[in-house]
Image (cartoon, rainbow, N blue to C red; front, side):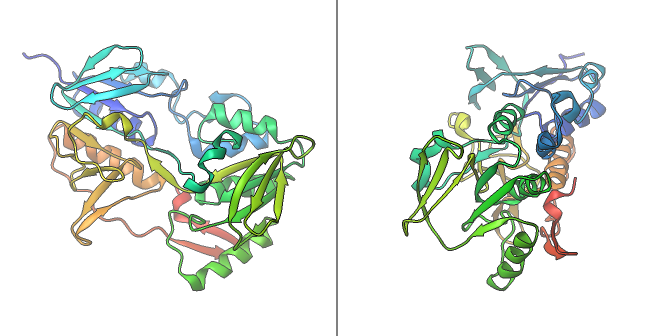
Length: 340
């Protein structure tokens, strides 16, 4: 008998964990390494707003118990930052200089929050909410009844905004082209959706372009300055303007990258040993004759499982799912993006 196949998965979210579990089901002898830059195991990032509902222990956000990794014989490598993937020699290099080989690699690294270039010089004055650690810092910076200024307001941000309002905080939403991302909103739909946000208690600033962010100290230490000279102040300012795929460590991988990793309908890249799934990849659409991103928890989970089956010998295509839907129900916004 030959050596067991070595599977490496970068990213321990819904796509990555689902892929690892699927590989184990299909290849009981495989060596599976699940690599994450996070210090925590697989947890539900959609549940991070619960920190404003009193959740303090990261264990309460776990998507699966930690013992599952041992039960499935999955090597979980936490707090491990990948700096390079060598697609010719099939190796992964970590920031701590270790090099790990693989036979098949699945990239599920997701993406970081996108910030419009005009405000890039002020990133150090923004609070983040993309990880448990960042969310804890942000929660501590917002006192009871405090004010949060939110730039953009994508669907991840709006989910947080509703929780903030429901817990007695003030939310000022500064809209832009990324509001309601990843939904593509027609002009005639925008007004109804903004009215629904206002009805929930969110203050809307629409049509004003932010030009600077200032640290002014005091009770409301962050101030956003607009091109017309007006300002808005709050305890924290957060940007929710969609996601930017995390692909910088793949520049030496020898695979085709546009904004994300370009993959075929089987989620395989231009290197036949490397697949991708989730928010990091653009999938070829036969119907649209182009590469498309597909967002949302459900789509990401399905991608991970399909990629894993194809890595273990299947030839299964990721079919174009139904478009993400958004509407107003009983005065509140509903989005299929939030469906798990």
